[in-house]
Structure formats: structure tokens, C-alpha cells
Length: 292
Image (cartoon, rainbow, N blue to C red; front, side, top):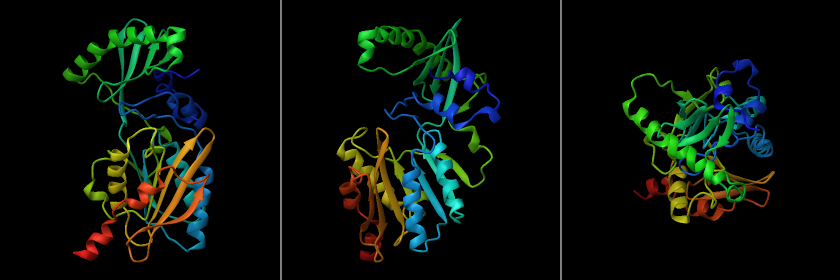
């Protein structure tokens, strides 16, 4: 059973193990239809593959971008793996939903919402209830329970967010283990909006469980890839695109060609990324620079 937001945010940080964090974040679904769902060490095979290639080619990473970090637990894993391999890179992690509020609605009912008022979890008399539906809910009747909770909470939540009299305490929807990590910075960011201070900055970019057909249509994915490749630092920079399918990861590791004209496929894990071709079609900014 999922842990409630009330219990999670009241625990001593020293007791917040990766398992406890996973239990809390696993069923939080954001307003853009992506999950905060996480599992510590689920990208271990991908991290090991990348580190092996970096070692073989004598690569030294200065800055790394991890896109769609969810709770940030896998970002911590990546950072620790890089450091263990002798890399001293600084990591920037991004996600669209980083801040939440836990609001009492009426006796026995609380709701955890994001900064836009989108419900992430309901608490009914100390029990956590998912804020999103699935097909089985029509059989169990939970569709009606969730509809009632949404009806009871929606107006109150948006009214409090609009008034915002200072009584609302923002909560970071991130692993508390990130707080004391000077080598990791987390920023709110939308992958589909170009971020000026990211352009041509990062030696390695990981986009895991964000750019895939399960979340977005092809037009939207193309826009996302156009932004992502613009953030690569130049020839020799690396890009990993991955998706978790059940218990297995499918990913493609790319590197920008020495002339900066194209992405090269370096390795495939689990058969490769389903959107590999979209990454290969994305226009590299270095080609545009050369033509100008």
C-alpha cells in the first residue's frame, strides 16, 4: 500500500530510504500525463553501459543533463555511478512538476496537489488513494469514489491557490536525499520549450522515460528532440534515450559526430529506443552554425 503524503513528509529524513521514497512516488501522476513513478537503481544497466563507453574513449564529462528526473532518485544513482568511475561532472536535473501542496479539505480528507492544483494523491482517513483512474476502477467502483473526491476538492484547492495567503507550505516533490548534494541541481523545466541557458552546454544528456510514444505524439516528440540536441555541447557529446518496458530498459546511446553534422549510434540496450529514428532526424545546431 502506498504511503500517504502526510506520513512521507513527516518522517525523519534519516529514515527515508529509497524503498520508502519509491513507495510514495510510485503512483503520483502529473498534469501532463507523466508519472513521478520511480524505482531506485532501475537504470543501473544503462549507467554501467554509458560509463563503460566513457572509460573506453577517455571521456571527461564537465556537465550532465538528466531530463525528466521524477523524484530524482535515479539522478542520485547516475551521479554516484559517475563519481565511482572517476568522473567529477556536475549534474542538472529537470522536471516539470517539482512543487506540491498538502491541503486539508474537510475532516478526514486531505489532497496533495501540484502547483497548478492538479491532484496527485487523496488521503481519506489516513489511507492513500490514487488521483488518476484506470480501467479496473469501473469494475471496483473506484471511478465513482475518485469522482466524488475530485468534486469535493477541486473548488477548495483552486480557491486556496488563488488566494495564497501565505498559509500554504510548499513541498518539494523530490527525494530529500538531494538536499545536501552540491553536485546536483534540480530545475523546473519543460522539455518542449527551448531553454536558452542550456543551449550547447552539456557533454552528456539522459532522457529516460520521457520521450516516447506512450506519452506524446510524433509531432510533439520531434519538437522535444530538436530542443534536446540543441543542448549538447558539440562534437563528441553524448545522448542517451531510454524507456523502461516492464522490468527491462530499452535505450540507444548516441554521440555527436566529430564534424558535428549528425548523431551516431554508439550502442543499443534492450533492442534500442523506439524513437531512435526521431533522434537521428533531429537538426543539430552545429550544422546550422557551419552553414552560417
